[in-house]
Length: 131
Image 1 (cartoon, rainbow, N blue to C red):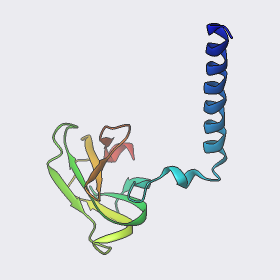
Image 2 (cartoon, helix red, strand yellow):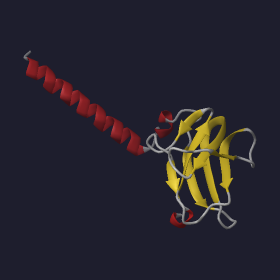
Image 3 (spheres, rainbow, N blue to C red):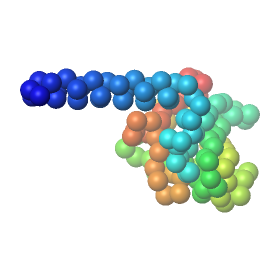
């Protein structure tokens, strides 16, 4: 077989694999298989009950220790938000951040069992006015 034949077969197999992966993920039937035990899922950021507060919640497949690091810039996450409602290790996590300025932008990452999680490798950003 000529070299171009091998390349064509390789491209076909690659495209078929991509299509299978996309269809498999889109169906949602086995999506949890891709989520490791302490990877945060269902992350929700919403205005808190009290003025100038934000509620951040997420879930994990296994009981994990979780908290958030947040700050005013993506490169300086020097404040800590901890879950005061649940046990130290939990599958449901809930953090309230208070004393925020409604017009200011904030950044945070979720730390779940000592692994940092954000959005595409970067901190998640929000402002109270955008929620």
